[in-house]
Length: 272
Image (cartoon, rainbow, N blue to C red; front, side, top):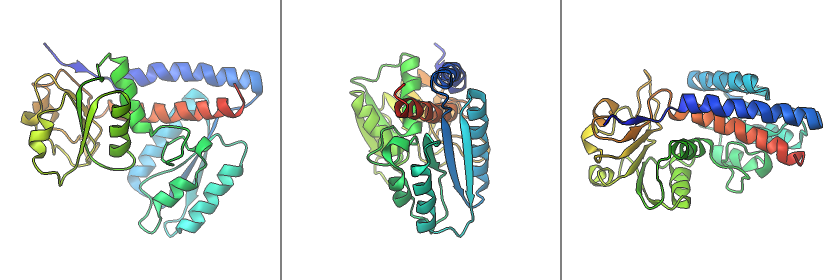
């Protein structure tokens, strides 16, 4: 049997239509339009691309955006002042710091400075929301009726933005979750046990096709130069039961999850 393609682009479009209705309803009842503030420090070309995609999706859904550009030399203290201004601004429903920020900026301090009710990227430990990419992955698995409970899940990657929250969310869904990284010993052996594999390492084709357990579900959250994921998908497809394409799998689900949380933040603030 051919493996199922977990089409994030297609699902994100469906969710987009539902969000449009929620935004229209909120505006009609309260006059409020959900607004996302994006803080960009420096001029990272990859960040510029991601922000363009976010702005475009927000525009389609009817969510307002406020892009705050800061110079490359911005300090942590200066970034936090901007975040605090966003915290106080009643028109802003959600705030995010585009990552990665330049090295001199302490991202952790900045994430923690965003108040929980506006942390739509889910990166403050006290956030009212979930980390956008893991949330998008869980949504994708559920919409395609992939069984999570009781299955062995392996997450390769330990970033606090993706790998760590992903493992926690899988545990919350009653999977048995193992978190690995590039320095893990016997990585191949651990991956071969996975019923669900989430690759979030940021190394092109690092995970070989022959490492994939027969019938496993492969979620490739990596996006490297040239549109290449972290898994050698060409070979993995022959062994897995379902997989996310790169691009068009995890990426669109991250964006739609983020915007969904902006809409939710606006609804909560206005008791809608």
